[in-house]
Amino acid sequence: MKEYQYCPLCATRLEVGMIEGKERKYCPKPVCDFINYKNPLPVALAIAVKYETHPLPSGKHQSPKFLLIKRGVSPRKGTWAFPAGFIEVGETPEEACLRELKEETGASGQIVKLVGAVRLEDKEVYGDMLVLQYLVKVGDEELIIGHEVEDVKYFDIANLPGHYVDFCREIIEEVQKEG
Image: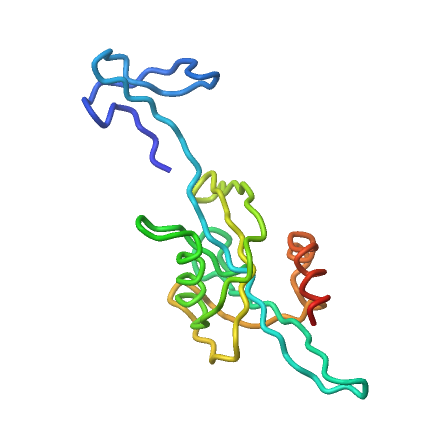
């Protein structure tokens, strides 16, 4: 995140003071009134699920699989993650969620619901982020590895990386009940 030294409006050197209960940089010129508020970056994340149908003696059973990407860029390059990205100017969080899913995996989906909103801090690149998490149902499309991605694959619940089991415990339970 850009760290201002000078006012972006009038080029005066910024000062530091207590403003609205927080230490913030501000422009000391009374006619300018610039305050350097640091707001979190908005991110949309897809908890993408595909249901596979399996025949059983008692009838058909659906087992959920979660779609993850292996990150090809920082932050956390090389780790498995849910498809996600920044919400761009002029798009809704839902549009951003489905756009990022398509860009990173080639899959289209339908948003089922907003799962939650969490604050994440990325110390590597971006700083504070506000992440809107959506449950997204995807179909049987062929997966395509996006340009910022090393790999794309579906995981059974039993094979999800450990931190995702904790991160999504409630949604995993809900998805299992539907199956």
